[in-house]
Image 1: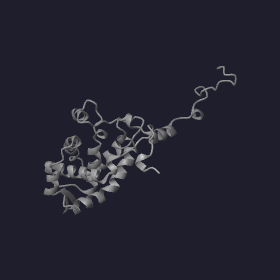
Image 2: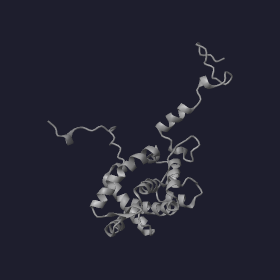
Image 3: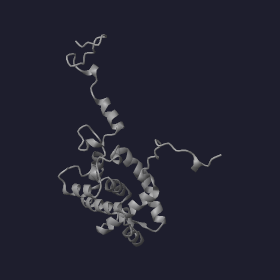
Image 4: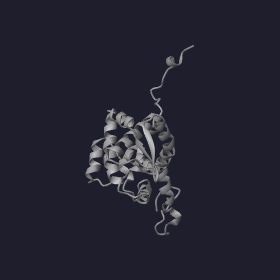
Length: 219
């Protein structure tokens, strides 16, 4: 009898796909960095609604910066962000999933003493001194890139009212045929677009494709 480690492995066997945002620790680290960046910009904190928008867009800045001549877009490209990455597929679905996890993640950070809620017309979440200190100790390349994205996106989005930000996020996370990000089309989006495309039965008779005869010759 052989142990699991002695079992033969196939060269065609691939490891399962790992999605970083499915990892709780990774998401918590991103939130700590985000809230520390808010504090660096002298912002008192953010409501859970705005924090949901900030959290998703800072991690996916190419949804917002679509102009290829934009200097900030070029800076983020140099930092390693790429709008062609698979993580940009189905942004509306991913945004919804991430927002559903936010309240749970914030509760954990509050329990750890890294984030504190405060009431100012609404409940605002802000990094504590311990949270800022922890964020400053993150030294990975991704952490530096994320800080740059946070600086650029938060500076831009802080000027948006809640209503305008909500409307803009709906636009940025919607994939359409004339989207500024055609590379983000995934299989589900392609099926949706295909269903909207005219079929042969919808075409005028003169434009409809003519099938070849049974002997293989074309008319």
